[in-house]
Image (cartoon, rainbow, N blue to C red; front, top):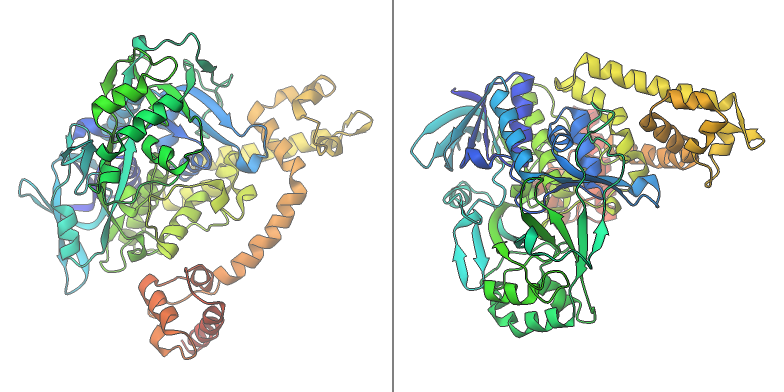
Amino acid sequence: MDYDVIVIGGGHAGIEACLATSRIGFKTLLVTQNIDAIGRLSCNPAIGGLAKGNIVREVDALGGEMAHLIDNTMIQYRILNRRRGPAVQSPRAQADKFAYHMRAKHTLELQSNLSIFMDTVVDLMIDHDKNIINGVITERGHKISSKTVVLTTGTFMEGKIFIGQYDAPCGRLGEIAAIGLGTALRKHGFTLGRMKTGTPARVRRSSIDFSNLELQPGDDPMMPFSFDYETIDRPSIPCYITWTNEKTHSIIKKYMHLSPLYGGKIVGKGPRYCPSIEDKVVRFPDRERHQIFIEPEGAESEEMYLNGLSSSLPEFVQNEFMRTLEGLENVEVMRPAYAVEYDYMDPLQLLPSLETIKISGLFVAGQTNGTSGYEEAACQGLMAGINAAQKLKGEDSIVLSRAESYTGVLIDDLVTKGTKEPYRMFTSRAEYRLNMRHDSCDQRLTELGHKVGLQSEEKLERLKDKLQKIESVKELLKQNSYNQKNALQALKMPEVEIDEMMEKIPDLSLYSEPIRYQTQIDVKYEGYVLKQDKEVKRFASLESIRIADDFDYDSVSGMSTEGIEKCKQIRPRSIGQASRISGLRTTDVAVLMVHVKKWRSNK
């Protein structure tokens, strides 16, 4: 074999996958269409957000790279939902998109065991008699063999962009699509569909009148995503807010017939939670205005990103409606908005390890699985890389529980329920989100990262030191009083903040802000966490009833035909996962549990 692992695609999933396998020690090749586009932030120049910021910190705790990339390139930082509870708070940072891409590219170039090759994969080498992957075939005719392959094509597989009546075979504006691979996968027996996403125009900063726009500054101080750092020293550049208006909407309605989305040219399903401006006008006819964020693309760039104004309308229409917004009356467009449609693989064809059920050794991650977002792609790429390495080592795959991580929720949702529209992670998708706070990701996942070979002994010792410091702060509170109460009990009161106690308990200043913050959350939410822990134990009891890979569903008497077919398609790993299959009856799950236990006792 030429390589142990071949990773197809240099986006956010591909970056994490190839770094994981190479760092674990396997000879890895990244094949990408354009080396100069590695780690490109195709759409929003930001990392993190609600639930997404938690995912970035989960990736970091496991030994991935995304947190390091954003920490070294951020140009604004904010904690979202700061006024709400910690279970729904999350960090978000504007990135210098050009610096982010360059740092990602250079990180891969410096990585040992990792080679980078610029070409387009158009087919896979598959032994259909043994149902195993053998490598890839490229556009220039190279046949490269490998033991495993990780497919992370993003929006490029049979991609097509649309601007009004103009369309072109591209995955991004100006970047040619990966033509042929989608057709090849269908030939190999995989089920593929079409999805659609879009991106707003980029406009010239100096053509914007900021005088009457609402300023949106970042938080001070900035805080790191990675647990490797305690502080961040980066420039902070503000964003701005403007609004659409009645005139904007009337122009869009006037030219709606020119939209490829409503004219029938685009057949793929678009993201429900990030609609184009024409979608918003149609779906929310009573809304008088929509909020638009004007965000910098980089510290040394004139380009500004109009977040909330994606469109596939013709350029002359875009120019006309943009200039109805306050501050944009004389705006100069540098890159137009456009929609992109692409092939994705039905994720019901995957195991929870992200390996395909059909072909051993073939893993799929990122937007290729029907997800939306850099963060969702990164965590899948990391888990696909980890599990490719586990397979090469002959060890069991690593599957994160939906009770311990957003990454686990995301993957479980995909492989159990599938998706017909771009999947985006939200805190509401997680049943046990109080246990998945962004500040505690290292406590939940660093040990696992060490187990698979991505975290060092030094990182484990650092985590141990952090936990000891948190306990020391709690002990310090126990030994002191505050407002005529024991300080630990006083901190449980909603109106009391730990930093307010520092004047009366000076030794608290000996501990860093992150340590004080996490201690405060631990103390304030102790009762809620204990209650949720009981729910997690009930959840774990069903997850612990494992279903063998070779379990014969056809032998299950008393189960509905539909239930049997769904289980045969998805191959759930446990009774817990089976219970989450869409449309599976409660009676089917009960019958299945009886037969699985009988099967296990007979083995």
